[in-house]
Amino acid sequence: MRRRAAIYCRISQDRGGAGLGVARQEEDCRTLCARKDWDVVGVYPDNDVSAYSGAPRPQWQELLAAVRAGRVDAIVCWHVDRLTRSPRELEDVIDLADRHGLDLATVSGEIDLATPTGRMVARMLGAAARHEAEHKAERQMRQRRQAAEAGKVSGGGNRPFGYEDDRITVRESEAALIREGARRVLASESLSSICRDWQARGVVSPAGKPWKPKGLRALLASARISGRREHTPGDSWQGTRPLLGQIVADAVWPGIISHEDSDRIRAAFTDPNRRTSVEGTQRRSYLLSGVLRCGKPRPDGTVCGHGMVGRPRSGVPRYVCPNVPGTDACGGTGTVAERTDDHVRDMVLAALESPAFVDRLRGSDGAGTELYEEIRADEEELEELARDMGERRITRKEWMVARQPIEDRLQRNRAKLSKVSRSAVLLDFVGSFEDMRDRWEKLNTSQRRAIITACVRSISVVPANPRKRWNPERFVFDWIA
Ligand SMILES: [Zn+2]
Image (tube, rainbow, N blue to C red; front, side, top):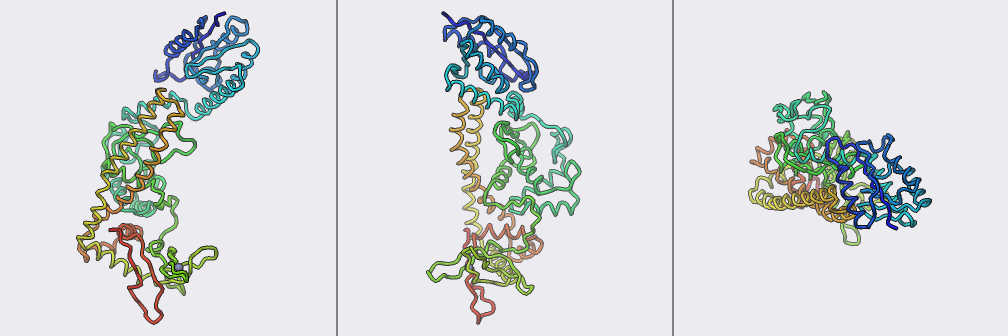
């Protein structure tokens, strides 16, 4: 006997027409029925009913009644998530399948409710759909995405910093601050240092609040300020929104900083090696902590190599190899901070005065262009994949498998790019030795540190000769270029 199939369609939050319309669902279901050689005895559309609000579904109730009355022996729908809104509803369907031999077929895949495996699949699909809906309705997400792809203005709340209330016109006074902040971050200055400065200058956010590192980071990392639209698919995160979304389009508003600088900042913020102490109450008063490495030889011929930390002795600031039980630090090297800082400054400025050195730094910077292109290509590919999944050309599983290697590569390239950009920014500072000495005095620790770490990977310090008071040869520089 041919199966008598009822098609059930449901659409939620489809006011913008962005969703999978009832007509489309029905059409796909009819094709499926034809393939399975089932007779379509009824179509039950519940249109525009909110997915998880618990609103009544009149057609659904009629369909269940038809099944109980024995007029229908198969239900066809687009996806399990169209069929039931909660695990309990799904169990009702499974019960009906038991009692009435009900068949279930979905356009997105076969589900045999007569077997334990089929039921498990149905439950998993139902749970996954619910999970998704609890975070963001899929169709809402698609609408946001479409708005994003069109580069449209979005969002409520305060106007974005740097723009007027229309979110499009640039507010020049704030744009200048954004450009300044970008430049300073690219010079590896810490967010807390910039915030302290901005607070002192009375710079406030659109909400009228003083800038905090976390907010400044979000501002500078946003693609918005480079005139690009960013989108974070609602199903790719839960709880805390990630710092970076996918850049999906050029926006309708003008950029304040270049795409290139924006990419560099985004790379810098996602570099695992960058210390972004966002809560950052801690001031780094020791210029060279972490840069200096203990160079004391061990009995076995190796070198301690531990990072030296700032620690005063009798009130005099010093860098020492920390003698901490349980670590491999030897505790055998120390040097006076002030004189060491001056020596390192002079060495770095002398290096920067050399055109050959600067040329080498610039040379290592050339790799940046290729990295940008690779990063851009990977972002586009991720974008393509997300679209394929959005339009169900590929399954979620295929999407997850395909995006993993791309994301890994992206992360590696972003880390590389952030290193490259550090040296690029240094070039702004370069001048004559005296000129740099003058400007150095006006820099804060964070800015000075940025310049030093752009030039040297580390500086090894060998233990002092007790007969010599100050010996610059104790410091062995590992220059970047
Ligand atoms: Zn040591």
